[in-house]
Amino acid sequence: MQVDELETFIHARAKCLSVAMAVRVKTGEILGFHVARMPARGTLAEIGVTKYNWVTDERSMKFQRMLINIRHCFKEIITFKCDSHPSYKKWIKSQLPHAKLDRVIGGQKPKAKLDSEKAFCPLFAINTRLPGCGMI
Image 1 (tube, helix red, strand yellow):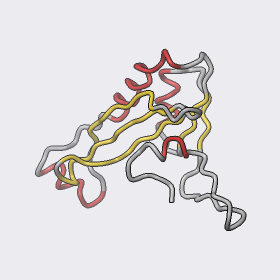
Image 2 (cartoon, rainbow, N blue to C red; image 1 turned 180 degrees about the vertical axis):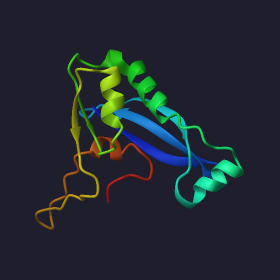
Image 3 (cartoon, rainbow, N blue to C red; image 1 turned 90 degrees about the vertical axis):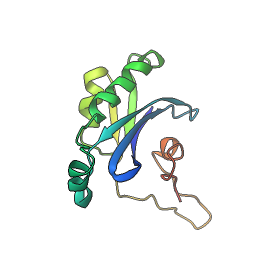
């Protein structure tokens, strides 16, 4: 199982959304997703607060709700593969205490050994399901 979040926006860049998604690695099947509001960061944060009152962060609640909704698809002991987002471990363990977590360190692009070989991406199953996040 692979989990990740896609960050996007609605109407204006200061109104950020997070789309949590879970994908079965072997089949590429999308098992679940939830959309959550999240506050803008950086230079857009002030605009999000003052102009849109966009301050609610629903990511934790919606990510965990997604796990609850698809829990019936899991074996008792399941391994989740995800990026190095610091909250994933806490969110997954709170709903599935026996789950194992295999984190892939971000920022490290896989390299092909030979020009004719394609690079292996450990998060391929989910990266190819999220728009704008496909591997090059």
